[in-house]
Image 1 (cartoon, rainbow, N blue to C red):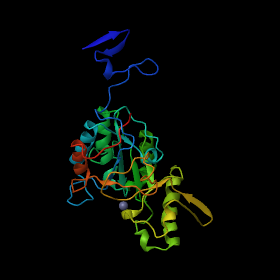
Image 2 (image 1 turned 120 degrees about the horizontal axis):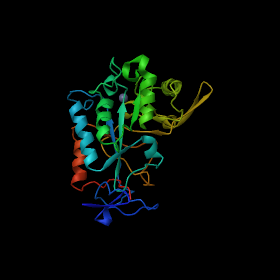
Image 3 (image 1 turned 45 degrees about the vertical axis):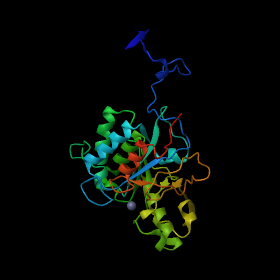
Image 4 (image 1 turned 135 degrees about the horizontal axis):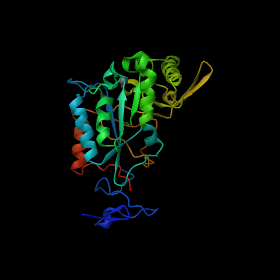
Length: 290
Ligand SMILES: [Zn+2]
């Protein structure tokens, strides 16, 4: 039951709609969890979106389920840049989730001949979900290779669409090699060539970086910045491929913007299902916006 006063909906339980700074009622908290700005952050890593048994696959129906589970549990999407910059804008009681997509596979983002997004690709599933859940927009981080989802004449359009929704594009190197097996000059070439390619599509140069296989080069400083052929390259963050949630950006001891954990977006042990179950049971304390 609500009272209507001059067009403003007032809930009968005033605690659920406190009056905000400017006198407008604020929405109810997204979750009942207590504020916890020092809690863990879920950074989920996805690759392929089709049936498959190993860690590289999430079926379209399971991905849709992930979105539903995350939403119901009060998670809302932010980007890697917002996470590492500690500028995650979240509703009260919401927990951040960073959805990351590696390798630029076509099943992440395909546009059909009629111009519509393939409803079975990751972006199609998420965009459809966002229609009925506008506070869970297609806002994630896409760590790409030159294939850039496989439809060459549509690369710019896709990058612009993703940016329009609030997503960002990151560098995943040019040839997806183990950086630990290369010398410094080879590592620089791998990173610089992909950075240049993305900049040619309008991505800002200081983009997020993700080393293939989560393997850092011997010279770890190369993931931050270096000079190659007389030009300075810098990246705003670098991430691992791992099996656990990441430290809060407020955790001065554990947080490192050039080395933070991601967990697998699939049903394997220590994947998203495992960790969401832990949250449900109160066994892992996640970041909760005040
Ligand atoms: Zn990869």
